[in-house]
Image (cartoon, rainbow over all chains, first blue to last red):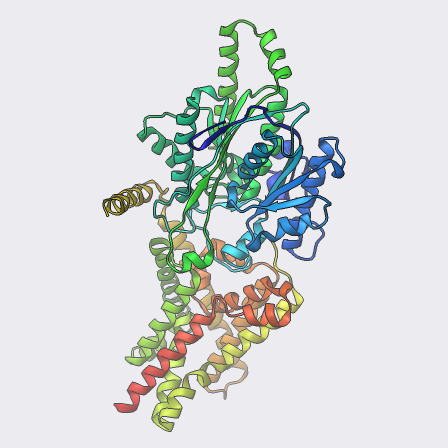
Length: 368
Length: 118
Length: 152
C-alpha cells in the first residue's frame, strides 16, 4: 500500500540480525560500548585502506548473518553500497558470497535506501531473506573527495569526519525482532549549496522534504516517535533542519537527534561531527537496534541523508544535491506487550516516554 | 639582529596566507599559486630585491621567493639569450628546488606510508 | 520561468541563512599560530643559509639560497614521510603552507597517498596533483615577464 512517497508494509518485514564494525577512533566515541567489533588499527591488516573497507563490509555481512542464526545459503539477496567510485567496496565484498547482489548508491543515505528496498521486496513476498549493508572509511573518503592524508592543511569548522565503520542487517519475512513498518522514499533536493566542506547545509533541505512528505503521507507527528534520527547532518546541519521544520510549522523536540552529531565526543576534534555511510549504518545496527530489541524505543524514524556529489561535478561548478530516505522501525509485539503490561496505566507510560526523552536530551547535552 | 626582521616579515607573509584561508576558504593549491604570482610580480616590478636585502629568508623562504627566482631567471635569460632565454631562464633558476622536491618526494614515498589522522 | 526565478530566490535566501548560521571561530588564535610557525620556518631557513655561508665563504649568494631551499625541502619531505608535517599544518595553517616547505609537503603527500596504485601510475602520476599548478602558473607568468623584458 502506498500514498505519494510512502509505502506502508502489510506484512511488516522483520530485522532478525544486525552487526556493526568500526575503527579505533569511532570505538572511543559516544557509541563505543554498543558496537559489535572495534578494530585495533584501521588498516584492518590489509595493504590499502580500500581493501580494509571491503574487508569491513564483508565482516559486517558475515556477522549479521551469524547474528540472525542463518547460513549464507539462506540468504536470497544482498543490497549494498558505499561512497567509493563504482561502489567497489560493496561489489568486491559481494564477490566472496554465494548470493545475488544489487549495488546501490545513495551516498550516506544508503542504509535506509537498502532497507526500504529490501522491506518492499519482502513485503511483496518475492524474496524471503535479504541482507542490507553499507560502510565507509575515513582514509578512502579523504583521498577520493578531499586531500592526501599527510597534506598539512586545516579543516574548516563546518567540515565533518568520515566515520570508519560498516553495518549490516538481515531482513526477513518471519522471525522475531524490530519490524520495518513504513518507508518514505525521498526526492533529490538542491538548495544551491556548493561548499563541499558544508555537507550538513547541503543535505538539510532534503531531510526536511522527506520528513514533511512522511508526516503528510502517514498522518503522524514528531510526537508519535520515541526517536527521530537523521544520518550525518552534523551539528550545523541538524540545527538548520530544526529551523527549516519550524518554518514549516513542525517543531522537532528532544526526541530528534542526528547520528553524526552524537557520534564523537567533544574532545575528539571532529568539528561538525561524523559523516559517511558508516555513520548512520553503525549507529542503527548497534545502539538503535539494541534499544528496539529491549523495547526501550517503540517507534523510531530513521532517515539518513546523502549528498549526491562527485569531485568532477563540483569542480565543474555544480551545486550539491541531497537525498533522504526514511524508514520507520517498530519494536517487536512481544517486547511491546511486556512493557505495556507492566505499565498498563497510560499515565505511567507517558512518564516512561518522558524519561526516555530526557535520557536522550541528557545525552545530547553531554555531547554539546 | 636581522633574525627579528626575518621572523617578522616571514611570519607576516604566512599570516596573509592564513587570512586568505579564513576569509575565502581557498585550498592550499590556490594559496601556493597566489603567492607564486605575487613573487613573479614583485620581481617583475623590481621590488623584490630591495625587500630581500633586509628581509633575507623572511621573503626567500616563503613561496614568494620561488616565484621571484622564476621571474628573475626569465628576465636575465631574456636579456642575455633573447626569446630562448625567456623560455629557459625561469626553470633554470629554480631547477634545484623542483628537482629536490621531486627527488625527495619519490624516495620518501617509497620508504614511508601515509598514516590515518586521529 | 517563474519556477526558476522562485528557486533562485529561495536558494539565495538559504545561502544567506546558512552563512549566518555557520559557527564563527575567533580568527586571531589561528592568525597568531600561522605568524609564529611561519616566522620560525623562515628563521630556520636563515640559520641554514648562514651556516652554509660560514662553511663555504666563497659560495655565490644565489647558490647559497638554492642550497638552503633544498635543505628545507628535504626536511619538510622527511617530516611528511614520518607523518609529522600534517600535525604542524593542523596547528599552523598558512604558517606551514606558504613557506617552500609547504610546496615540498604538497608534492610528497600525494606521492605517499597514491603509493598503492604503483610507482608509475601512483607515485609518479599523482605527485603533482596539488603542486602542479604552482609550476605551471609560475613558468607561464615568468615567461610572460621575460618576454616583456625583451622589449624594454
